[in-house]
Every structure is written in C-alpha cells, then in structure tokens.
Length: 224
Image (cartoon, rainbow, N blue to C red; front, side, top):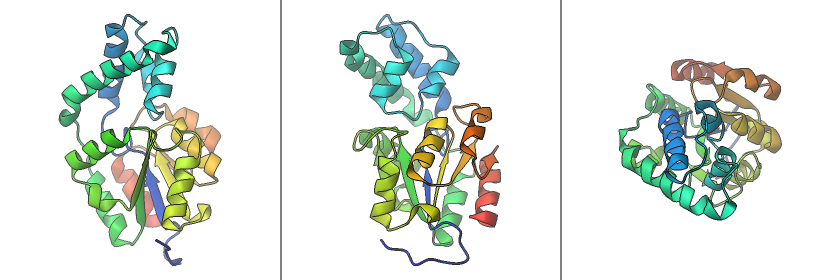
C-alpha cells in the first residue's frame, strides 16, 4: 500500500504495541512469568523485573527474567509460561475505549499496524479474541522478525505500507517500544498505564505521554 500524503494528517501510519498498550495484559503476563520461574525452580522475579521484560520476544524476555537459569532450560521455562498464559488469556480485554479509538483512526484514513513481542500464534489468537483483525493493515511479531528494540519490525511495516519514517508514529508502554521507534527514526508516544514507569520515557523524547486511552485518543485526533 502506498499512501498519498494527506496534509490534514501528520502521520499516515500509526503502529501500536499490543500488550499493555491496547490489551490490558500486563498483570497476567507478570504472574505467568513468576509462575513459570517457580515451576522450573528458578528465582522468582519481582513484579518490576517481570514487567520490565514485557515487549521483548519470549526467549529474550525469559532470559532476562530468569538470568540464573541454564540456557538449555529456556524451552522448558517458555513452555510453562505458555501453559499459565493460555489458561487465562480469554480473561483479558482491551483497555476501555480502544475499539472506538481504532475505529476513529480508520475513519481518518490512517493505516494501522501492530509491532509486538508476542509470537505470531499469540497475536493472531489475541486479535481473534478481541475481534480486531480487520482494523489492522499489517502486523509483525518477534518470532517472524527481530525482537525489539531492533528496528527491523518497524522498518518492515513501513516498507510494506509504503510510509516513510517521518509519517509514521510508534505508540507503546515500554522503553523497548520507544527505543524501537528511535532506532527506526520514527516519532513515538508513550502510554503510562502499561508495564514500564513513564519516568523512563523521558530519554526518548516522546511527543506525548498518555495516562489513559481517552487521552491518547484525544491527542491523536488533534495532532495525529
């Protein structure tokens, strides 16, 4: 897709992180990481340490969450994480106002994308559960390209949709998302209601930090 530039829009492509940005999944992911570590006899990370790895690909996330575990046991740890997550994934929901925000952006002819640390299977299941698949023009997951903060997934999305960096906006709840944007030369917005303390966002000079989906929606309609 090659979008014609629209002077009424600052951004033609808006790329969203998934967990903690659109989907209210941070507490569950933290609990599942902790439960998986407990299952394999690894030291159980604190809430803060477990939340820090959200947004990374599963292998990188578990390596950071359980640094004392032998690498050959990462597949076992990953399997236990998936066991706990799959048992509760249908309990999760979008943050309030997310669907209305995405629909209004589509009406303004923005292209929408997802750039996530989830697996392809995990994202497809989440999109199906949330019934959002038709709203996104393209998606990338960590198991089909490089994990954040490597810029490859965002570069691939821009190439696929024919949008340059200055007309692309990345939105996420972690420093991994904002570093991804910086590495790809793309402006960013942080949301404070996900996994990372927004104090850490300052280093990435986000255009805005939203404290709710409603605030994010309003900013995008006025400035996006």
